[in-house]
Length: 239
Image 1 (cartoon, helix red, strand yellow):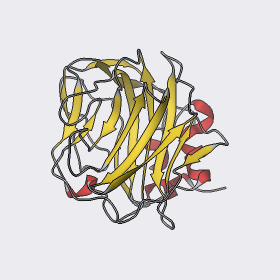
Image 2 (cartoon, rainbow, N blue to C red; image 1 turned 90 degrees about the vertical axis):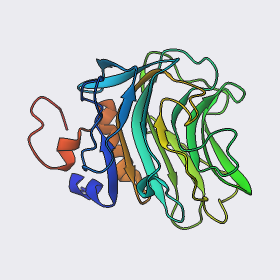
Image 3 (cartoon, helix red, strand yellow; image 1 turned 90 degrees about the horizontal axis):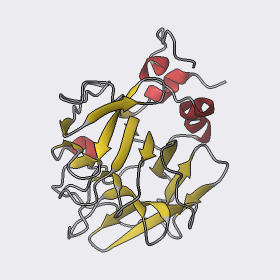
């Protein structure tokens, strides 16, 4: 059985989203504390989470080399809930729709009726859909993992630890460009496509997580708190 401690390997940031919504959301790795705007606290996976109002809410960090992710494999994994699916709500993004140089974005697309993850540079993009044509049920927590693989450069997405994961039709070539956009949760960097929903336990790795590691984070739908990979006492949390 794989040790939970392997989840610390190449872990860049882990935002538990359990700090006061009126202050910073701290990074368990003490690297990228996020500034919040118009947020509320809500019940999350095994604890508290952050709620976004669908208009002005956002979490962000200014442009930083740790979230550029150009020229390397990476994985994002986290828990997300939609209260509504108006516009094309963004879960996290380092790419404006109008940017000449893009990086990455996870959002719901009303056109595709699907969650989609896009990785791009100034010459093109690769987008992958989760369960094309099936909108995620509202008011329920969903575990979403997206990654750029280390070998061939395909963009991937998996939802709720399904045996099915989708990959882009073709690999990403040339890598992502370096841009100046900040890293935003709940909206694009320019404030468009706001999320009406909630986010909990979002983490970023500088590598591709294995299938087994993804399942460890899913933890039979109960989620995994940061204390579990620290191998400390999580008290009431089942790991």
